[in-house]
Length: 428
Image (cartoon, rainbow, N blue to C red):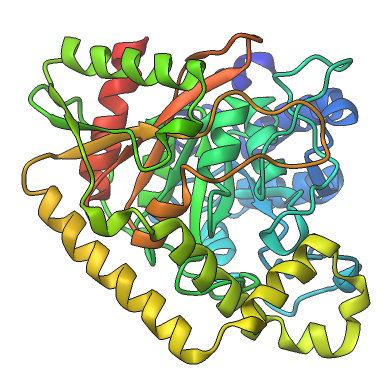
């Protein structure tokens, strides 16, 4: 059983397809790991071992299809995504016990690809700020640290080896930041790569479905299979890498600065041409633009809940909606126009570099479970819609993971993943 846990998602799928392993055996191995780790990590909002085994056994009985590229691979689904056979609460008491009639489109795609949905992972309230119960598995039990948010459970479950792959969503920093804090790969594709149908909307022009994995190759294999795009990463020897401190460099800790510098040197060892790069001035105000767009769209998206059960919102979520309600349509249009101009300016930057390298977070995961950390280094890239891959690249002063984000041009996800894979290999 424990040998199964060491296999990559790609290897698992290949071995199940060749009948060297059964989906049932793979699922049993991960169930054992969940039962061992879950009492301390609390990554799962819903988990039913018998249901998971029934799904795996059904896959084994029904033969093999060449289109089922992920056959037998377990996946964790963020509890922001609808599942027809499991409750979906979106991290809010408003939806306790809610049973959707259909799967989210990305979940349906997983089932079509032959995956076993192990369960629903903990999300913060409506993918915003109110933390769930999940603990960071990299931190000692007597000194808990946040796993980040909003995709708390997915990042923690992958970090604790309770599942090889898991879905996340990002509207500000909800994939990259938890991946950074938990020390796993976090892949936020180009905005719109994976469908949002059946995912509770927060800010549709920002919301992005992505993945957590233990390697860049697994993340690429997962998303590539679901989107029917070849994202298989290739080692690159002549990359042009721009080191981007972002407008928030003053907030980067000594750990974050050291790890960024170390990652830059690793790229150089891999044959890349590396140089510092300053973003266009139009990017300086984009953090506030992202906040305005997110708040305005959230206020519109949650008008029904606000009308009927606003008393069940957390204070932080109510404050976000209040900000959105204070903005008018002209404010929103102006923010979107600034974002459009910045995207054009960044497109010009990518004429001279292949990828950018930037901090993923201020530093190590903050102590305690009362907050999920600051997405300050992520908001910019989410607003612009570029593909981002977080790569763990070292540890901080307290022994917790610290990493970097590789950012590529929009719709150049294969290049971005290949650059991240090259860094991953160089880091060893």
